Image 1 (cartoon, rainbow, N blue to C red):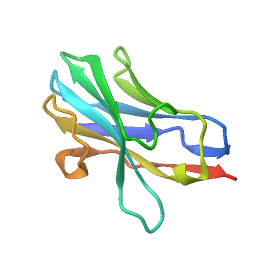
Image 2: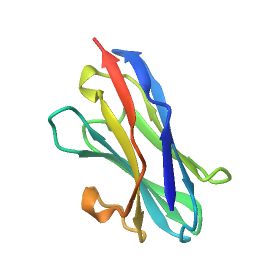
Image 3: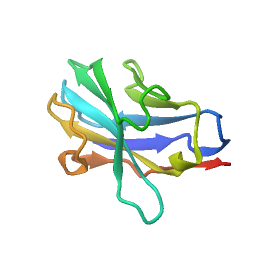
Image 4: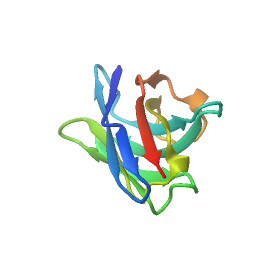
Length: 126
């Protein structure tokens, strides 16, 4: 399984960005795609996740810090997960990683995800 993250960039406070994560290779019918982020000198933290059941998107889950501002979704035909980020804040500045976890339970712990994309940088200016 390979994950290709893209779409990071620069936004102003209050602006929006969308990052994408395309999965390729042999995925199971059910899995979880999660987004994590890591700011300089900080631990990697969970952002959001979406459950895929029988290759179709299912439930979602968000970290408290982004709930109401970020939306995770999936294009089933393209096998791509998106993270739409609105009302961005400087504290959202980080490298964003997508990851794939096996099974059908959404977890916020990074060690439970087996495959990782390369990360894409999101910078929010104040």
